[in-house]
Amino acid sequence: MMVVREKFEHELRGVQEQFVALSNLAISTLDKSIDALLNHDVDAALSIIENDIHINRREEEINDRVILLLAKQQPVATDLRRLIVMLKAAHDMERVGDYAVNIAKETIRLGKSEYVSTIKNIEEMRSKTIIMLSEVMKAFIEENIDEARKIAELDDQVDFLYGQTIQQLLKEGADNPQMLSQVTQLSFVCRYLERSADHATNIAEQLFYLVKGRHYELNN
Image (cartoon, rainbow, N blue to C red):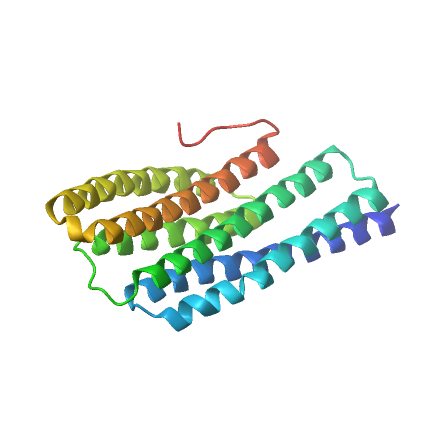
């Protein structure tokens, strides 16, 4: 029995390592997508789109490994919860990669035109979102709910910045109708960052479920 348990724990550590690799790649890609946007770097944006397959593949590998563990090991309730939560967290990180791709596509559409002043808010949103994702990944692996709770506080800040930035962009569009196309595309970028931050909160909530055994909504 002990051998079976040790084997399970070894496999579980392997899945966690894959989750960390997936998370690091998704977070790095999101960060690079904003760099590409700020630098009008179409080549970098194209590279992000092409490399999305690697993030998708990593999530699929986690899914396959977890399903195999569920089938072979017949885990007890706590382990079952851990595996299901791992699947959900991996999906959240894969979605962050998708948002990075969406930002890259907006960068290509925006071209070389000079940005409106609200681009500074987007930089700040990026910074907070990257911190949220990095911190929640660590909290998730360490099963640290105190750290996870802080993620929700940061999400409030990102939501506030999002609302403020959209208002400013709408004003820019009204004052300068010729900038309307850019304003629309930058609004989408803001939305993708705000959604990425929401996925960090999702992972924090899943961690609470894992540790406490019940669902919590952290950003209400």
